[in-house]
Length: 247
Image (cartoon, rainbow, N blue to C red):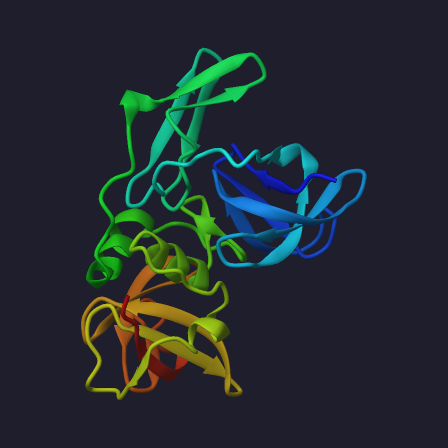
């Protein structure tokens, strides 16, 4: 059985069950690696090495990873590999695999001999969320500009700041120092609940505004009750807690 896989797609859906009709639970981004736990004729059960999340991927979307020496994580910019046969885009948060990759007999080169940009400071995760993801469509299990969910947005913004962070909002809420409402500040993480169960998260842009993924990545107002949607003029998410995370 294959021990480890990666993908040369911009991103690959990781599903709850080995079926294309199954729920998308997370995404494997370009260059990220995963351990193979189980194998069927068409599917692999994998565990992502970045956050240890487990799910199933179709075999046609991944390649065997031979422990290629990586350069840096592609932090706060998109880049691409180019060749005669086309272009492969590396999204923000994807991982570079070197100056070139080989697909069959073709070698695709990293454009302009690009390298990953400088690591983003943790104090700028809200700024990066706006720059990289504002208006990106909501996708349950998504982690890229093509589709992203609330905890995926937070996780990838943390990743480009060099901070490993859990995948789900409920586990993310266990990280950091709890902050009282009123003492909150830019880049604090705000969690929201339904029946006391944490179901949503966003990043503070200032004391009164939050960026989060709900329908799309959007900016709304934060009140002591929760998120106030400026379009519907309603509270859409009930405030649970505010946390401050440091490197």
